[in-house]
Length: 237
Image 1 (cartoon, helix red, strand yellow):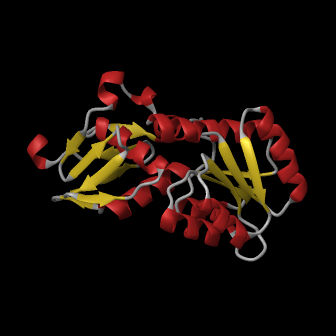
Image 2 (cartoon, one colour; image 1 turned 90 degrees about the vertical axis):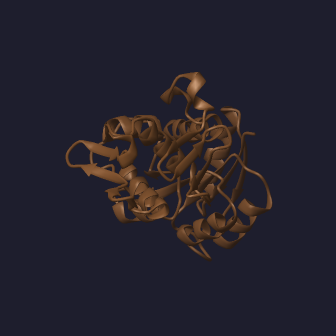
Image 3 (cartoon, rainbow, N blue to C red; image 1 turned 135 degrees about the horizontal axis):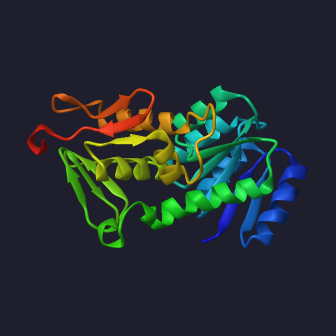
């Protein structure tokens, strides 16, 4: 499914994106109002939503909140260049990625394809094919790549596409430090750039959803200046 919904009040930008994304094989629908955009995103099935922060009616954050109450459709937010707060808030609310305005449409296509790869294929590149469908059980966490579901102590945990892929990468390398550069490449499908805190926000969201502690250990440890480590349970050490 290659249907994309663009929610942005800039009509000229919507027309530009419609033309460009259509030439890349996507079927594009646009909406220029916050409330209508939220309703449209939930009324039909889309492969991805491109969502601007600044919208008439309700802003992009409120639209995202409405979407996330009922849907895990991938969302890429459009933010003002240099506005780190908007980017962080969007990611904390469940956006899969962000792109600062103004941007090159080719960059948006690259972000869309990166999000699609990890949401549809489970980011198969992170491990051998034989391992991608095998369930991962570590401590109180059970992760199933085939259905892209996660349970903690038997309870379902709702994760975004980025959060799921991040957790899978960390679990497969539990007990080892994974660099931020490596995580950004495997989880977000791009290179780490200066001042990019996206992966840190996704880690923070995972901690909140899974619980900061696993037994007597910190579940996901920050290794300052390097990256993150998912702690092995005491029985596996």
